[in-house]
Length: 81
Image: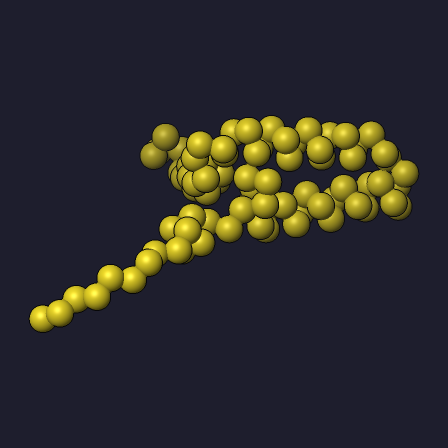
């Protein structure tokens, strides 16, 4: 048999993250931030959000699966921990 090699793209190997956070967590954080900043006029939360994004990017720089594994561990029953 003749096998041909195909390139494996990085997007297949790594999860889709935004600032190190999974997309659904990032969107939830963005919606909460927009609500608090626009409707409630709590502008301090924008700084909190930026610091959360910066921290998550630093944490997941070397391990793109960090938050996926972290959220799975949180869901485990107490017996498994």
